[in-house]
Length: 353
Image (tube, rainbow, N blue to C red; front, side):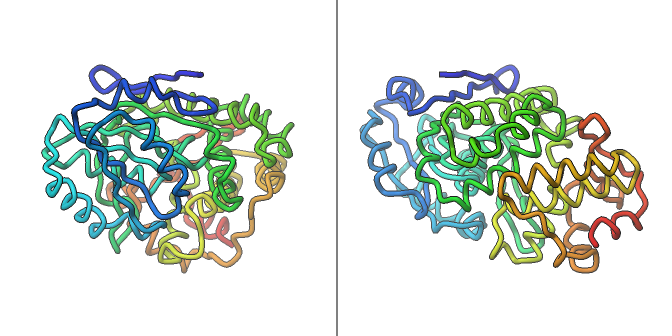
């Protein structure tokens, strides 16, 4: 088992990475005499839910299932979970457990941050995307019609427990969705991860255990280092949004249908890399390198259906808008990420062509 720490002070927590969940470790965080609500969704195999519940010693363990998909990350779902907690008479000594992908983790964390002004929650992510990205860093949120993640809070979990076994039953589309976030870490400063992907795309696509563990660990090391320095996105943490301005706009344009978060982010990474090229921060062969990495993992790199006129209004609602101007995350020639508001709008339009 690998253990990586994130956060500071009272909000510091551990991320545990292993092939299978540790029963003893889990029950250190779940108190026997306190209530626990496991929040999951209809996309999680019943066998996984049954097995999880069987190893939890809490005498008051309850299950709440959301419909699978981004649409569940809503005010309506938020209220339904709150109603359930009130019905079960949860108090501040009780806990939530997010068991699923990014949607489940985001909404569970947000509920935990607001119910009774805050109760504990545990993250057990079951998708690659959630394991390498959304379960780490304490960002919690729900979507509203005006945009993605516009209502939320920074709220670190008690711990994150990652089992690579859950990836074995993950549909290929969901696995590909997570690879987009892995690529992001490789391009914003983790040269070791970039080299591993370039040399071993087949092993990664085939979900070889050794390589799953490596890409998860390296991704989390990158994120935990950044979020520990900047827990509330006041500075360097912004680079974690590489590809997300365009990616979130693509999701919103599609009304959060027909394209996964990870697939949208992958396209966003291609567009942001093109913008970095047109702004003169990377060379043409480096842009080709980014596209080749995406292609080698079997991911879609064709963003031709999304032009500037289609995405403009959605980008205007991005959280990185400051003083009326949109900030972009770009990459430099050393494959390090950085935030800037200094760019030519003509190059943004060109990157989207």
